[in-house]
Length: 140
Image (cartoon, rainbow, N blue to C red; front, side):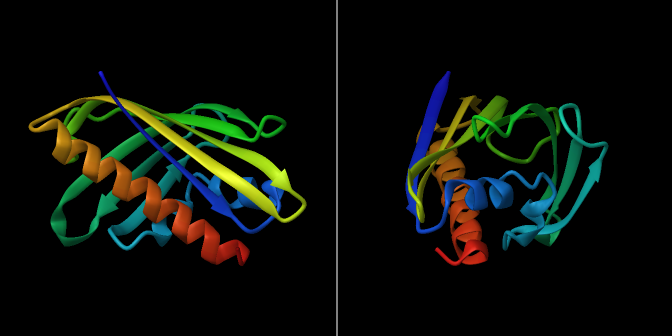
């Protein structure tokens, strides 16, 4: 199993960062996402992400959600996922660094499909893109 972790600072309160980054339907703000449909709410919610350019769809299930710990996790559930991985599970944590400072720690574990370096690059790009979108949204 391969692990990818991205840690980046955001210049906003940890609560504000967590509120934004934990919005399960918020991935529609990423450049590669055409649409995102969320069914249900809380743990067990399922989001279906349709990627731009007909690249396919990614179906993810919210596995854990702990606002007190500013943490959540999700897994990819569809076997026809176009991303170069299987058995993917990710955890996002927001750590308080001060009144207007937080660190986002995004960790994914998966089995690569194809070259491991390629799969790691895709996952790292997703995490950095997600954090950048949150940074813009919270002004940090």
